[in-house]
Length: 259
Image 1: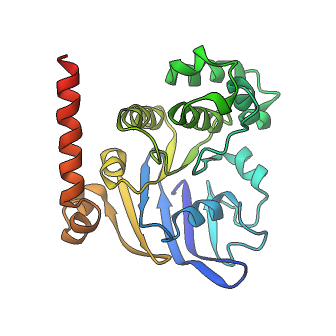
Image 2 (image 1 turned 135 degrees about the horizontal axis):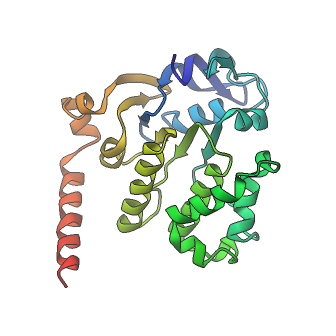
Image 3 (image 1 turned 120 degrees about the horizontal axis):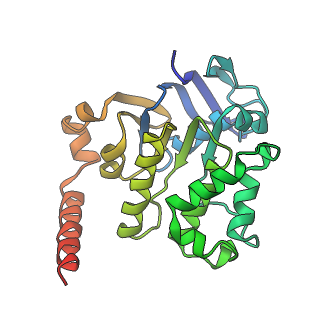
């Protein structure tokens, strides 16, 4: 049985604008599944539909099943308790709160769990820089550090499924590389991940399976190994310009290593 099943859902903004149309996806236990698509394709709406962060009556059609339970009409906080946690696009931290206070907000649903302290230690091991800045307010951190806090906060609810919305957005390449190494490690330690990402190279480097969205519909899906071989995917998502950029970045890293 799949961990997550999204079945033919449709969602609208303002009850008029159709954002996603008949989308069906699955995430298996232990998988990293990526969703690719241009701006406005419906990627974030899909994640918000799963987390129930849209209007109360959204998704308007279809069903969402998590660990054998229907969740498409469940309250968002109950979905977190069941085991789904989302890292939103743009981080959306509590800016006036410290790093540790943001993490405590993530563990709110587990406030009586004696193992919470172990998870504080665990997420700070993922991101050692946060241990040094645990009493610093979130608004004073760099963009990369804020993304680390956002991921750590989501992990504090101990999710079975982590939803990541554009984790590389606006970050320097070296920071992105470090964050994606941790994403891979989190998955290897047992957390399934649904990853929305515009950088196909990054997404394909960690994901097992991929879906491509265009105008609110899935137009292609398969293993990432298969998708990378398709001419349309190579042209639109793994284009020559980006390949040159990646090669340039690797050369830069090699030079820096030997300085």
